[in-house]
Length: 222
Image (cartoon, rainbow, N blue to C red; front, side, top):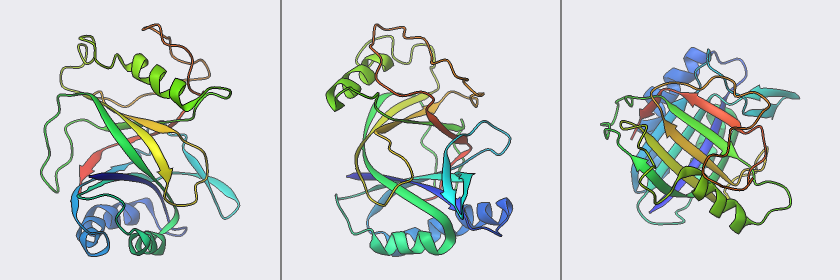
C-alpha cells in the first residue's frame, strides 16, 4: 500500500463555499478516474473559525491552506502526473508528499464513503530540529507519543493518534516537512502560542516550533 498527502488552496476568485462543494461532491467522484487502485481517501477542510497557520505563497501573498487530502492506494509508487494535473486545474496551490503511517492508537469508527468522521481531524506538520539527524527525529517523536507503551491512548479512549513520516516530496513544496501528526481528540486545538508543549515522556527536543496546523471536519470521500 501507499499513502500520499496533499494540501490544497482554492483558486483565487472562488468562494470557500464553492471550493467546499467541489472538494466534497466532485473530488471523490473523479478520484478513481485519475488515480488507480484507491482504497481510502480522506479530506479535511480547514475550519475557517479555528486556528490554522499552514500558509503557502499564491500570487505574491501568503494564504492559508483550505484542505488536506490523504489517499491510500493498493500498490506502491503508482503514476501521479494525471492526478496532479487534475488538482492543479482546480486549485491555486497544490503540494504533496508520500508518507509512511504509524498508528500509535486508533479507537475511531471507520466511516462509510460520504460520511464525516465523528471527530474533527487535527494535523500538525513537523519540521526536524536544526542540527539533529533523521534517526533522532524519528526516535524522539515515537518516544513523545508513548509508542509501544500502555500509556498511549489511555486518556483518549475514542480518539486517534497517527504519525506520518515523510518518505519523499511528490510535488514542489512551499516548505519543508519531515512528518505530520494526525489526531482525533473530539475538539479543535486553539493557537498553541510561542511556547512549545511540555516534554512529559523524557524525549529530547526533535522538532522546530511553531509547527503548522490544519484542522477541521474530516470526510471520507472515496
